[in-house]
Length: 121
Image (cartoon, rainbow, N blue to C red; front, side):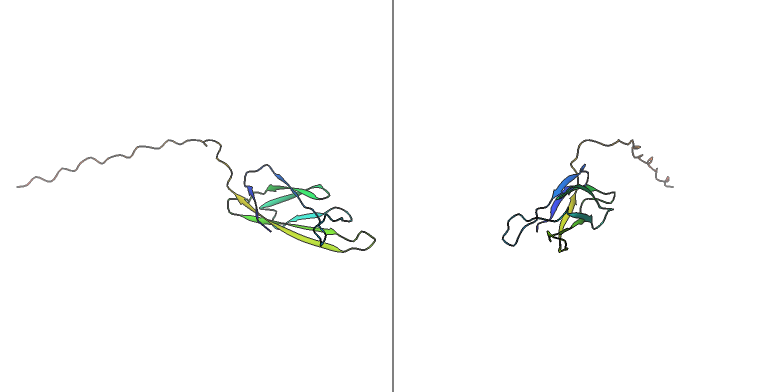
């Protein structure tokens, strides 16, 4: 599975999964998919609906960092439980430059006064 990329300053993205059968057709689950972040400091996962969650960068999300969304669901449509699991890698990239931050003032370098050579006698 390909690594999905997300800007480290993104307000959030919806991550949606599609349960599939062995034939590649849409499958059914008994209840919602459970989504968990491998590292909540890098990526926060919040529930959205039965097959999706909202991903937002955590305080540790910086360009080049990443985390995994781990998912699980019950594929047994009866009283039993047959848990299926999956994982998706999410990589964070630097956000787009949108302007200038605060400027600074710096002193000009000073040129030392020239040193006169000692008089020759």
